[in-house]
Length: 212
Ligand SMILES: [Zn+2]
Image 1 (tube, helix red, strand yellow):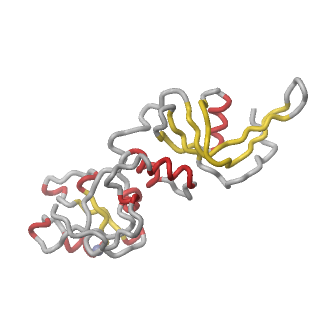
Image 2 (tube, protein in one colour; image 1 turned 90 degrees about the vertical axis):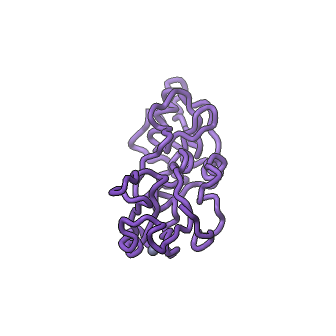
Image 3 (cartoon, rainbow, N blue to C red; image 1 turned 180 degrees about the horizontal axis):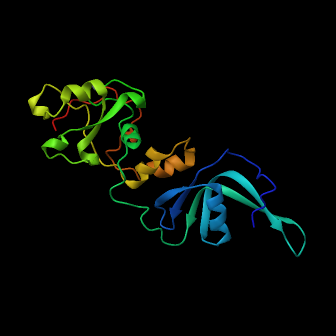
């Protein structure tokens, strides 16, 4: 039982623990409290990665000593997790902008998130779908300039093609804080080969214009 009177010794502040299944497939991010619950329910098969937190439990009736649970950055758990691993990750502007590294895929300039928008390469009014493979990050100026035109109807070109991130990449795109090195290396090994997160340098003007 978690002792709420005692703050757990912190190694990483508010760590996110990467839950994987027993086949090594990333499933979701856990808070340290969720990780403790999984330990208590004996659903943890193994853990690895760096130690991120120590949590003190209750006193043993046998010897009076307190139990100590060390949480690692990666945790393999038994049990099925439904609806977590989806073929089509939810499309949000934040994840989209991160996929494209906050670069407008028309002019190639880097922008703050508040100055970016979601552009439908084939406009919704012309039958385009609101899906990962039809949307790119665009600055508001380029988005307004493109309007409802198709690319072959205007002089604008895409710097890179839109793609759907797989689940491992989606977990990296939607993480709000710093991803620890061992977590990132596990995720990267499972990114799709077209992932922009695998590129070393910035996306800016690094690609030849593509025909959509
Ligand atoms: Zn632009």
